[in-house]
Length: 72
Picture 1 (cartoon, rainbow, N blue to C red):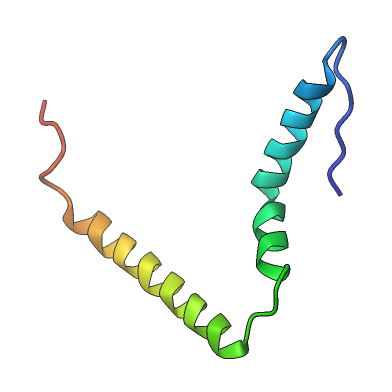
Picture 2: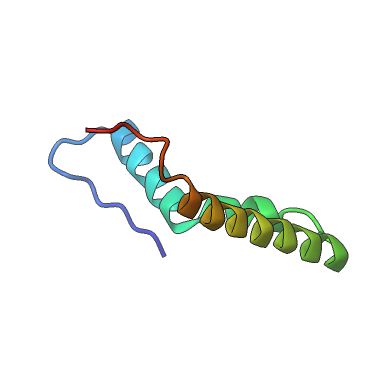
């Protein structure tokens, strides 16, 4: 559970901004958006596979990108 306590003379807007950042950091907003509608099991598998492929491509691209940075 996320709790936000007021700091000194912090305004309500600042507290709300901190709360939203904490929710984003915890992944709460993504979870709510994902569970707000029914997702078929086949769609869930497809989404997970796309995510795994993207993660795999990211790791292979990171290893082979040796010569593109600034040289000193």
